[in-house]
Image 1 (spheres, one colour):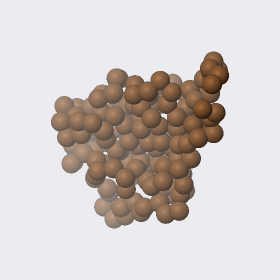
Image 2: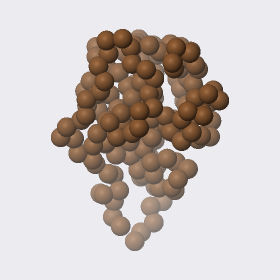
Image 3: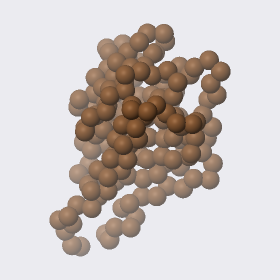
Image 4: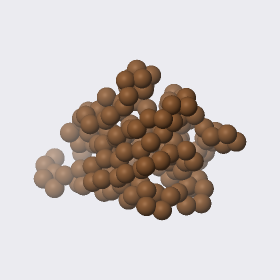
Length: 168
């Protein structure tokens, strides 16, 4: 097998993280349009993640946050985002590097991205999730706003893995 000196897997992963960065940048500048809202799952102990000791004790491995009605001060930079959220009525400030993100899902349009953790493998790949992160992961989200419906499972979606198309 030939060696991939170009590292298409890394280029594809970085491009898809760029989609996430762009969406969050637009949300920070203009708010969330229409019914769009985001489920973002990340590794709690990944390098650069900043959570309060209370949240880290509650979510020692990974955490899913929802950006919908009750978030504030969303700031996006080249390699991370920061956001204010309320957990159990207590305001918290989170800092999440894009490299720590495992999945992103917008249930309003059934669009999702799923990432292999960068630390876990040398050749991470991105893929579309078969179900929304909220349905596939334990309940680790901020409390929904009053009158907010829980997310529905994504029916009929398929998983596409980039490494499936790569020559082995």
